[in-house]
Length: 271
Image (cartoon, rainbow, N blue to C red; front, top):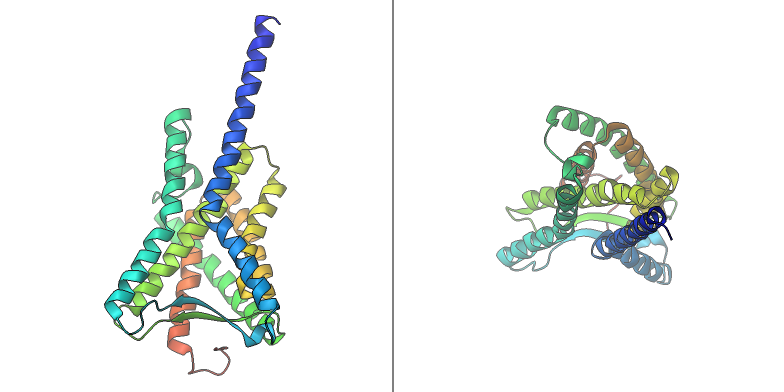
């Protein structure tokens, strides 16, 4: 083997090792975060299907009390849960920043998770939230009426002073975890692994739908559709931040709105 052939072989071997390491990295990140959530949602949905009664007769609670009779302990548990849920995002940030240091990559700015365009991010995030939030509510109500969705209970926290701030923090945490990992990070890594744009879109969208399957069939398909739209917008804008804003606004309205309206209006399903 000549020098040129040896160089090509070494380079090809290094490329294969690099892709293999990236593949392992993706599996570990997802295994610590939303991939594990997807498996858990599948198990929970299997339990729901094998339980007596229809889907709409059962409930999925999103923000529940951990110590309802001890508000300060409950608050500590709520903040602990929010903080630990963000650890995989910190891991992704570390991996992307290390990529920047080692390979002159763009780091977090490469996925648009920064504050460089606040007006753009807030404006378009609000527009996307209005469109997807309204259609999502109609889809949920229709799926629930058709018996294809569980009764989603966005919150069941006690009426204490920290209830609304915790619900808002929970919404922001959800948006950061999902959009940074399932859109920004996953699409970047799948592209580096040689996936086609369509294949990466399908993987991201189906993953999003699967970890929402605990809500029912309507929750799955609604979130797959949301995933397709978010991937398209991310590729158009090159920024994940408007999606984080949109998702946060959607969840804030859902969590706080349910807290204010549950039991006061007849069109909102309650457990």
